[in-house]
Amino acid sequence: MFETFGFQTLTASQATIWFGMALGLAFGALAQVTRFCLRRGLVGQASERRPALAVWLTALAAATLGTQAAIAAGWVDFAGHRFQATDLPVLAILAGGAMFGVGMVLTRGCASRLTVLLASGNLRAGLVLLIFAVTAHATLKGVLAPLRTALAAPTLTLDSATLPGQPLVWAGLIAAAAALAAHRSGARPSHLGLALLLGLLVPAGWAGTGFVLYDDFDPVALQSLSFTGPAADALFWTVAATALPANFGTGLIGGTLAGALALAQLRREFQWQSFDSPAQTGRYAAGAVLMGTGGVLAGGCTVGAGLAGIPSFGLAALLALAAIAAGALAADHALQASPAAPAIPAE
Image 1 (cartoon, rainbow, N blue to C red):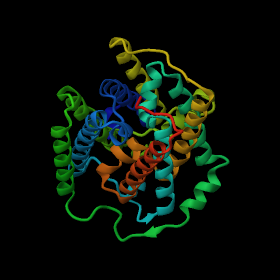
Image 2 (image 1 turned 180 degrees about the vertical axis):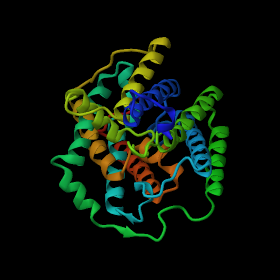
Image 3 (image 1 turned 135 degrees about the vertical axis):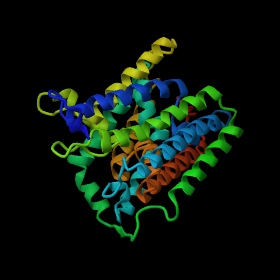
Image 4 (image 1 turned 30 degrees about the horizontal axis):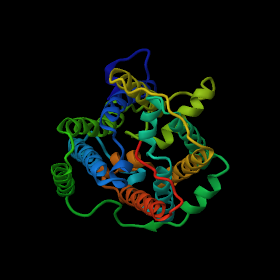
């Protein structure tokens, strides 16, 4: 469709950068206000956990209903996408998801939350994201690539890589679960409303890259909100911009930082923060390595495989999110059971 716009100076690949930046601006602003993060919805005090989970599920419901509507309209087709691959790398997904879940507990936030925190002055988040991006790139193309290929080698061949039954039934169940969680959570109605808008960024991303920016002569990848690959892309574009072109992920990370920074300043929430001790620094660094490697192995983070992946109803995304949640809960239980472990509140 992109070629029908008649742009003379902007290719589809170049347009995806600006599109990613626009999505990032909106995501960063909305996530700053709602403190959007699955980690906050899984572990911690119930008084904080329930509203956070309600916000996350509300966004997921909006993302699912919007994505399924885009599929029904013919704007999005996941055929051939990794979320619906019939050769499922079960070992890589389970191991990677568990690693990511443990890592996000150790670092007090998932990758998207830490990106937003960096924009509000959190230097802990900055160091984590740096290590996270380097480790993700090393797992994709560097010294950890053999580990990735070894774990991805064992696959489970499926006749269908999506949930059985009618997609609208599954979408309705997710929406009902979100409504029930919101009703019981005590979350602010304004936050739930903003979560709906945040969730709609997912189908906007899928439809934008899969339909609006589709060009036979300059094909772009079908993609939406994600933070593992984009973090690596943004880091290495920053240090080698003359050799590596920017892409959708670069724009997404830049937009997220800008959107979160703008809202942090407007709401007077910007505050410099750093580490309290060398032990804390080491824990965060270890968590960053686990998230970087795990995010690549699992095929995405809580946003890439979760918020954006679940609406595709691909089994790979569902398995990844389940493994992430299991890893996070196990790590939190282990920390709570250790008398020497310091309390790790949510960011």
